[in-house]
Structure formats: structure tokens, C-alpha cells
Length: 481
Image 1 (tube, rainbow, N blue to C red):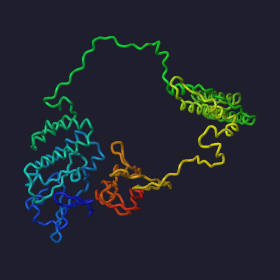
Image 2 (image 1 turned 45 degrees about the vertical axis):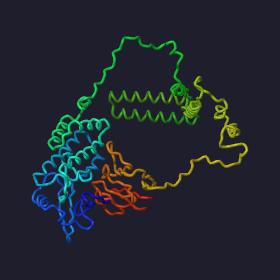
Image 3 (image 1 turned 180 degrees about the vertical axis):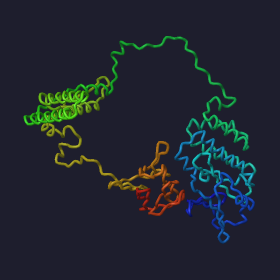
Image 4 (image 1 turned 90 degrees about the vertical axis):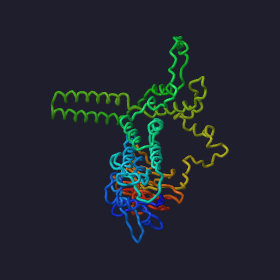
């Protein structure tokens, strides 16, 4: 994806490292560069500037900026949480860089103060700015609107309450446009990042009126007699009835009784054999407890039988069906005698003979008609999507947003599709919808992204067509239109 800045186009390339290239279609001429600024950049290692190499081939000049071990600010904002303190550290480093540029005979108006041209290291104060040594006529105070515009964009990444606080703070503390005023205000913001409404309120704002004191009027009391007759009609009463359903037992047959006795004897023999092999007071207590518990279980199985959970399940199903048929607010539950008789498991033949009277799927006039009771077939998905094969199972993920993110994600950075392989970055790659179609872009990942087994250059957009295979570590995603 190629865009323009200062009349130059830029793109990301890979030449023995990740580079950002500024160029001109017809070729950038030497007369368009500022000789003084170029010499100062070559003679001095200016802090907090992207390392710049000027390449000239056949009078065609290109500006190459080395991006190794640096992260684009626009992508860092998607991954990491931005607070007021971090925003103040970042802006303070940027303002200091602009203020100190005059020490190297550089013009502060030649800095590109946009999120895609600002890079940071491991810390938010470790800033690297893009400087274009062009001979361009600028207004004297043009850098201050660019600082304000960048600050307003960064504020949008904060929470709603923090945005309101910082907007009011800007109107109060950075009204005077100078680098010294910016640095003083940002230093105070770093020292006291938690602002209160009292400290940021406008000087002429009206004080908030305190609530009127209570006049000691008597408060309304709940009538306990009336409360006895009011019972909330919720599902809790139905749930309590379900819990009161008695549990029935099914007696064991003769063969089951002998098998139970044999298992109990074998278990007793095994337990006490362990005690005889390792005698001890603590082990004796454990064995005695297990023996008593096993004896109780055996007594229940031999004299009562095994629990019948099927009847309890049927009663729960009846209760749930009754709960869904509540319609009268004056009555707690309305029971349908016909439906209860039909669901009786003891009268299955009568239930199926009169099934046409209790359902709308079958009718007596078309008793021989075939009725489809399964789920409706899924329609084939259309539109941009990704097809994934996971353990032999095919999955389809629709691309519904203009910027579709792929990565492992976390609590602070959510992605549209999660890849859980080892080595996947939090935001690994993006599929961006443009006016010319869809493009794939590596979002500064550690292990890279591959398009049809071709490694992508970081932050560079590549057009996608139907059937292209995107590989992230071991996961392959097929792009479909």
C-alpha cells in the first residue's frame, strides 16, 4: 500500500533488514534536498531520529530509513494499553526532539508527526521520528498545529473519562504555543497523571450545588401484612419443586445381587491386605472409614436397588415444559392435562395415535406426508472469508470489518481471528479492505507472515485474490471472495 507525505510516496521493503522507503515517481532530484540538512545528518548521529541512508542511482534519489528493532506507533496502540502517563512520556520525548533539532541545523517542520511514521523501542519514551531533509518552504509556526493534531489522535485511544479530562487539560495548560510550555505541561502531567474534575474545571464554571439536607420527614414502611400475600412469580418456585421430586430405586435382579456381593468382598480383601502390608494407626482409621462407606453403598444396592435417574429426568422435563407455558399472572402455573397424559411414558401407543392432534407438523389430512424434522441446510457463505482446516475439520470465518486482524490476542488487544500456535504475535497480520480490493499486511510480527509461501515485508500491503493461502507459523488460511 503506497501513500504520500511531503509529495513523496512511501512503502516498506526488505533489503538485509526492514526499511521504509521515500521516493518520487519521476525520481527525486538533488536540488529538492536541503544540502545543509543532508550534511548535518551525515555528520551527526541525531538522537531519536530514524537512521537515514540516501541512495542515488542514475540521478534517482531514494530515502531509506532503517526500522530494525523498532515498532510502528499505530500498531503498538492496537496491542498495548495507553494511559495518561504513557501518553505524556511519549509526547514529551517528541517535543524534546523537535526542540533540540535546531541544535543540528534541522527544521522542526520537516518531521512527519503521524502515527505511521513514529516508531518506538521497548519503552514509550524511546521514540524514533521520521525526518525528511527536503528544501520545503514552511510557515514558522506550522509545527504546533501538527503537535496538537497528533495529541488529539492519541487522546482517542484513552478511555472516555480520560478523554474528557485531557481535552479540558489541553485547553488550560497548552494554550500558549511554545516548546517550553509543552514540556512544562507534559512534565506536570507525568507527575500527576490522575486528574480530578476540580483541577481541570474551567475557571468560570459554576460550583456544583450540594444536595438539600433531609428534613426529617417520616419514611414509608413496608406493610408486612400485605407482603405476606405478595409472592414473586419467578422460576425459583419451579426450581424448588424440582428439587423436592423424590428419588426412586430399581431393585436388582438375582444376578446383580451376587455380583454386588462379590465386588464388595473383593474390595474388602484388597483394602485390608494393604493394611496388613503396611500397618499403622492412621492407615487403620482410613481403612475403617472406607469399609463403612462401602458397606453403606452395598446395603443400599442390596436392599433398595440402584437409583432410577430416568424418572427424575422426566419429571424435570415436565416441570420445564410447564414453566414455559405460564401465561396467567394470577396463577403460578397452568397445567395441561392432555399434554401431561401424552407425555406419560406408560401410554406410548396412545400418545403416537393422537400425535396429529398435539402438533402442527403433522395433520390428519396428510397423514402419509413426509415431514423434515432436522435442521435446515446451511446456505453457502458468500463474500470475503477465510477457510481453515483444523484437524481435518473445515471452518469458515467471514471478513466483515474493514481491518480484519489475526493473531493470538489477549485481554488488552482483541483480534477477529485467534491463532493459538506458539510464536504467533498478539496482532500478527491484518487484512485491509481498500478501494482496489483486499490487502494483506504483516503487523510487525516476530516470526513473519507468508502469502503463497512468499515472506511479507513488515507493514507493506500485498493484494489478495481468491484462493491465496496465508500462512502464520503452521496455520494456513485460504482467502475466498
